Image (cartoon, rainbow, N blue to C red; front, side, top):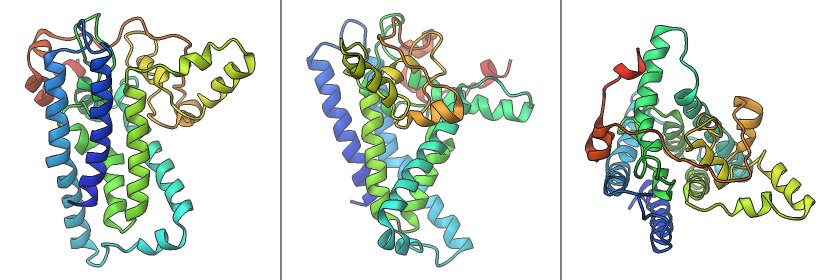
Length: 288
């Protein structure tokens, strides 16, 4: 088993445990999750572990080996000499790159036609991430962490950045940075809202502290509102560092209650077929 596989499976294990907890507590029933949602979860996780991550790492290796034959492991010294600064820089850069790609998938349509076409690919590939449950009854679930269209893994630049770091020899940095990022992102997608206890606490200093922390880190309810059907659906695009939502993208939204309705409206084909959700390549609705 490679380190890439180990990182993937460790996060998948957490997601599976949280999904079981959601199911046992009844949070996946009554239309909150459908059979098609579970099929999507299995399909996307399987493709990520078996195909997408290994393929991206292979392409990076082939490209750099062809251009820079001695590049494999060439930055290992950086990790050995400056582990903590390198880890912090890796984590912050990876989250910024992820936030930029995610923001592009949600922002207003650009004026240039070529940019509209690129954005259409991002929007189409990201759409399955915002579809879950029966329409008007769906809930956010931890298994949405990995749910996207098949192209998402190939077009999001932060995934390439992660595996580029691994190829260049930042093994421990990749391990800890990616696992922490993955686990935190999974926890913000889980059907938990523990942060509301602090946002609505009877003591003012607790509420103010939580309000301040929500400007730095992304908590579950913030990301729940990103998955809501309403004014905040293009907000809170960062999965771990709300600092970028606040200072870079202008997309920070802090609410003190759960969303009323989750998920985007689904077409009939999306309701009936997980394969259609995953492999759909029709860009026309995004270019009209």
